Image (tube, rainbow over all chains, first blue to last red; front, side, top):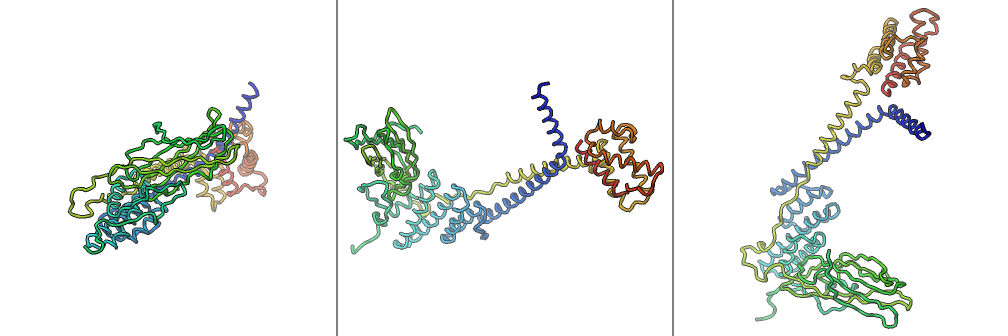
Length: 202
Length: 298
C-alpha cells in the first residue's frame, strides 16, 4: 500500500471514530434545531392568518386598527381602507410606514391609493366649484402618482390617473430652457391653472 | 436592449488637439413614449488615450425638469483603436402628460475631460423624443367625476401556504430526528434492541438502584454479567477480557473499569477481603452508564 493510501485509510478511520463519538450529540442538536425551526414557522403562519383576517375585515369596511410595525400587506389594506374614506392624512402616515418596510411594488401601490384619495377629494371640491381649494389636492395627487411611477414605471393605473389629474391642472414647462444636468425642477418655472376658472368680469 | 443606431449628434470640441473629443447619443427609439415610461439612451464619448474623464462632471440622477427625471447613470470605460471611449448608459423617466403626439427635449450636459493639452469640456447636446397621449382629449361623458379614474383595485393577501408547509416539513423532520435519538439512546420502544443492552440496563438501573440492599446489588451485578455475556456472544470471564477488548475496540477506554468490576464481582461472590468492597450501587450505575455510552458510539 502506498503511503498516500495508508494516510487516506488512517484519515477515514479517524473520521469514522469522530462520527461515532459525536453522533449522539449531533442527533440531539439536529432534533432541537428542527423543533425550533418548526416552532418559528408556526408562529409565522399564525401571524399570516391574523394579518389576512385583518385585511379581509378592512376590505369589508370594518375599521380594524393597524400598528405601523404591521406586515406590509396589512399596512396596504389599511391605506386602501383610509383612502376609500378620504382620510388622506392618516393614510399618508401609513404610506410612510409602508415606505420603511414594504417591497417596491407595495410602496408604489400605497402611493397610488393615496393619490387616488387626493384626486377624489379634488373632484369633490371641483363639483362644488371650489377651484382654489381643489388646486393643491390635484398637485399633491400628481406628486403621489409620480412617486408611484418612480417606484413602478409599468403601473398603468397610475399612468392613467396621472393623465386624469394632469388634465385638471396643467403644468406648462418652459420648453425653451437651455442647460444641462444642474437644472432641477424649479417650481417657479412652472405655472399651474385650472382651465375654465372665471377671471375678471364677463 | 437593442440600441438602433440613431446618431443624434456629433460634436467636435477640439481643434488644437490631435485627437478630437466627440460625443454621440444613441437612443433606443425617439418616439412613442407615454407618461411614466423609461427612456434609455447611450452616450459614447471618445477622446485621446491618455485623457481622463472627471467623474464629478457626470450628470447626477434626480429631477431634470418638471416632467423629466434622470434615474440612472452607469459609466464603462474602454480603449478602442487607440482612442479612449467612455460609454454612458442613461435612463430617463418621462412625466410629461401629452394631449397630442409631440416632441419634448431631453437637456444636454457637459463633461470635463483632462487631456495633455489641459482641461477640456465636451458637450452632449440636447435631443428630442416624441411623447404620446394615453387617451383621447375629450373622453366619453361619465356620470360621476371619479368614473374617469382607474379604480383602487384589491389588496393583496399575505402568503399563508409557505410558512404552513415549512412548519409541516420541519415538524415531520423533527419527529424523525426524535425517533433517531430514541433509537440511538434505546428509549422505548427501542429499549429491546439487542445492540443496546447496556442502554436498556442503564435505564433499568436508574429506576432500581437508588436505595438498594445487598441482594439487589447481587442481582444487579449478575445482570451486568448477563449483558456482558450477550455483548460478547458467550460467557465473558475476566481472563477473556483482553480478547473481548480486542474484538470490540469501542470498550477499550473502559479497561480499568472492567478490571475493577471483575475484581469486585469475584470478591463478592467467591469471598475475599470484604472491607475493600468499593464497587457499590452508585459505581455500578456509573459503569453501566459508561458502557451504554460506549455502546452508542460502537
